[in-house]
Length: 557
Image 1 (spheres, rainbow, N blue to C red):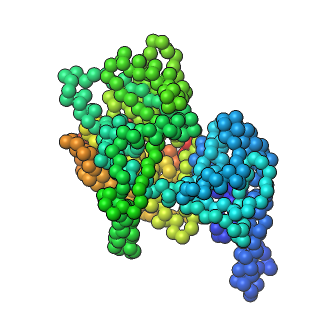
Image 2: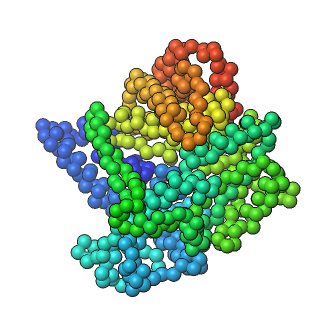
Image 3: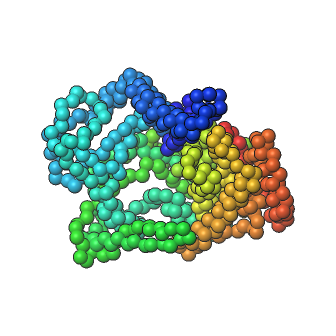
């Protein structure tokens, strides 16, 4: 059962397979040759799993992850999976796809530097999703064997002569660098498009500064969240490429590869980077392609204008063959013509505050303050999002994992006082530690079947996470370059991050206190040593109010 319960990227060791086998019960293994016989038993168990158990599973089941279940692994019986593939192949043909013969494929890829991508199907809530592996190189047999029609797994034998093609990502890497160069030098060419938290932060900061300084009374903001339906399948690619006609493209670009060797305490680290210098001495000309971001957020100051804009989105953009997903609209206002519009984008916490969900962020419908969106953890056990490291040094891996859980929540967009109030800044820190504490419990619960650690080790691991969070927030806040007149402002008192982190760990672990009595005593003593934080106690109490974090307390851990 341990083998089939593994999550993605987890490994099943020989030590795990022999756990709870008491050799003393077997007289055959308890004589003077017991050590040798123990080795023989290990080899036999390894053979049993590798030659019988695993082949049996492979022969009868298709093993895959599912889009809606994070790291959990699912086993589909082969006939059932073939039925799913057959239905999906029919769906593709209905959508205009057609199967090509070998001659047609060769004709398409003969005159280009990359071949094709391997595709696999990943189950989702309703149906399956195609996932293309753009990182892998491709091989096309010179004389492929005849096969029946339909979707199938393509394999190439060792002794078969093949055409070799570079991966799509490898071939398009230079063109991608050219596009990034254009984005940096001509940001206005992208309009309001954003690609990550950094871009969203740079767009939001001046907008909020305008609201705070440009109006005597802060106006209401009407927000619309939308999503393009099947953007990469339906949007007219030729129309997208025409966007490049308005860009100032040079005929040639010169790429320079930079390698930096960093000496650390234990090893040499070699990060690599590419830079775009100029067009002189360029080896090749570059053609660029455009892509379409599928999620959009629009903030408007006039309700009538917002209503008209929403109506325009509903109609779609026929010139681009672009339609919006009607089920994924989200708004912080009512439209008279559509009074009963419902969306899962709008979420209300227990204290009555309304938020719009967008790209992993919670946007306050009234103040535009930013919090992290934790709703994606609500529909399944938190343990299904983890990958537990059993091998080598599990204790060291645990400490690394705790820091990794906190890293995505250390972006300046959560802690800048230009955007968020003092209470929300501290609330974001507190919620990040709440989730980390829940993952900590799930992780060591799974790890306990193999090894256990002392209370001192757990306290040290949690203490390291506190120091890591504090250091990373400060480094990112002070080093972030907005390209604007205003800079990020971090207003946190001494010891506040530690106070919030310890409070979060204590509240989560108290719900499982029978397992953590000694650890809770250590954490309580550390919290008392920090003092009462007199200057900001009221703000800290507001940030740690359970009603403001009601969404996290609904997570199953």
